Image 1 (cartoon, rainbow, N blue to C red):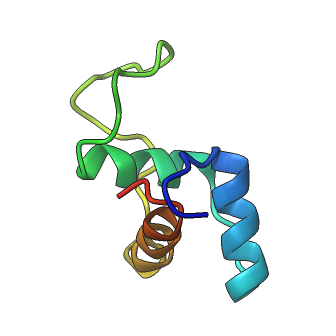
Image 2 (cartoon, helix red, strand yellow):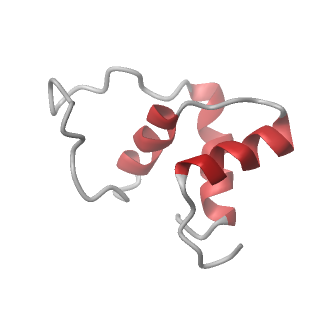
Length: 73
């Protein structure tokens, strides 16, 4: 898995397989944004300064670990 850029679906499946927890794509996007890994704002974003559904604190570590496994962080 190292060095590959994972899709949001692959990240979701990785977390589901490892922890039996389903994460939302907007949570993954929020973590990527926090780490400067996004290239643009979503076209449907109403306020560029606010995140409508920020990643819950208890899910952040799981998403970061999965992103690291895929080499995305």
